[in-house]
Image (cartoon, rainbow, N blue to C red; front, side, top):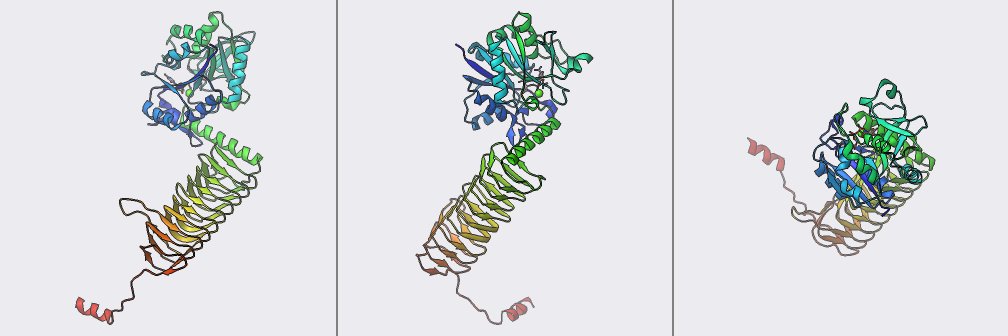
Length: 460
Ligand code: UD1
Ligand code: CA
């Protein structure tokens, strides 16, 4: 058989977090903790990944749907502890030889540590191998109690620990490899006679040892991998830690941060060298940023791909692409589906949505471009609008290369402006503009003489 499975515990009530959200969906660097755990588990390619759900299971189910991975789900209808949670995944245990149990609220457990623990687990032929570390503050975690030979004797929870045990600095990460058969035998023997009146998974370790099987401790390479979040304060600490880890890594790669105030960068962001990130800039989701860019200040960039030498100043960008040499902002918004071409200039108070903007086009001021295909070298005057929505349907606007859109033009879609064509300032363009032509579509001037006098007379 020789199969491995992974069980992720995610059913807990998370009362200490004081939130209507299930705890495992609370975010560290904008990614749910459960997402971090599943990302790591997937790197091991186990035969099955099972998530134990209970509190907020609909929300967790919805989150799992958004992910690419394949998961089985086990239901824990009443929360009677981590041991009870694993029991709900009995079928998973029956189907594999070794199982990795992970906590959904400990996001930093990494592939390297889990692989090292499996190696030890198999080499020593253990019934249970616990991943442990010695963090700066062990309070709240289960403590590792070793025997005189240094082998793992048992795990004692904070609430149940004697004063002497509370002085132990080495803690249980909540991640373990078990021999499935040994675990299946131990689980029914768990008791809830402890301070929390819960069936602790941690007690399975002592039971497995008691049955004559070997139990081991694998010390994590980095002490931070064991950190978990039970409270808002813990979550804040995890965010701070992860934030500085990402920034530290980018500094190593040649990214420049003159000041870190308000700078938060997600895990799935890559940034090229000599790019400068200015204060109050958040970059999250899957983003790729090229070399020699200047991003910020005051910008929010999400799921966006940015070329080299791009300047984004006070920009909100979401699910867009910005090609090399483009400058955007200040105070501009790129909404989903925008492609900003090479050396395009997007100026202040410009919004672009679901549009393709060709190379070297300039949209410098106070303009909305939505659902449009704009050619290269086009110039938009100030205050132009593509009217893409008639209240029921959305339509596209097409603008050919080198067209000139006069100030304050409304383009009523569906409509096309040909190559090299111009629109007169203040026009509301309702019909296609032929290439190389000028179209002025606005009312002829109407002069009402003595208007001021007439008004005065009526009022009397
Ligand atoms: C647990 C460990 C502790 C370890 C710590 C690491 C136990 C008894 N204790 O403590 O030794 O140091 O994790 O972070 O296991 N869960 C369920 N169903 C339940 C209870 C919990 O699915 O009935 C899930 C939670 O959603 C959470 C995980 O199990 O993801 C851990 O539960 P939690 O209550 O946070 O355990 P800790 O007190 O942190
Ligand atoms: Ca916890």
